[in-house]
Image 1 (cartoon, rainbow, N blue to C red):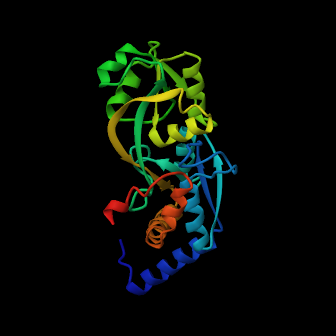
Image 2 (cartoon, rainbow, N blue to C red):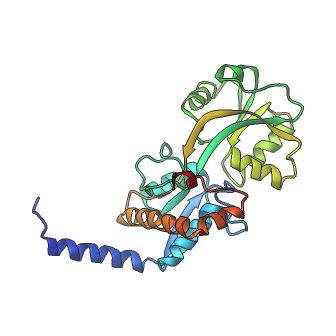
Image 3 (spheres, rainbow, N blue to C red):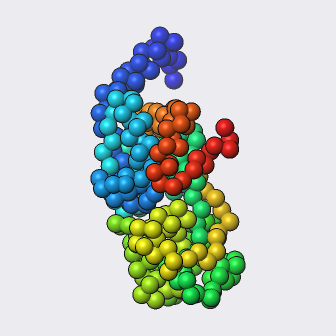
Length: 261
């Protein structure tokens, strides 16, 4: 391959920056997953959308966000039909462009009715119950393997990842269609609060894994990498200015990266 002179590199970099600056709308797709991201344009937006909007505006862009089932959002962004997803772990989209630092931490737990006597004590304890999971979600290596193993034997109730899937999962739980549901702790706390069911549905045990979650951008087009870099720099500025924690305060959350600073 022909070597590129330093002058050509400078021009190429300038053209890339000019191209990014001309893009006035960054398209983001995901299924609702409050407090990370919300339902369409209805408030609350979710803190990841708040972050993305602040960073985009500071760089002369706008955000265009709407909901899609999670697996469909990943496929569409991978193809370059849209720019980014939010709430992604690296296992969800290994080929995507990610910011340097995570946009949050996700930890899953099991939840059931307050009167339940079952508690999660390890994978073997799942043999005692029927479990609600959300289609196409990844939880942990062990739990994902368990879900695959029991996909067709009646041990699972599978909820479609549309609208607010956690609400549907809770409705199935209340209807006694299963004994427990597994979901992100922040998401379930927000959902139970919104449904006024914080006393009726309780945590029954926590998975050990803590996973970084991100905004993740398309690998199909150069702008995906540009946006990931922009969101990296923007998150640092939000954190150093104190604006990041102010946004998180609206959701009752604290900065997961504060101890690292």
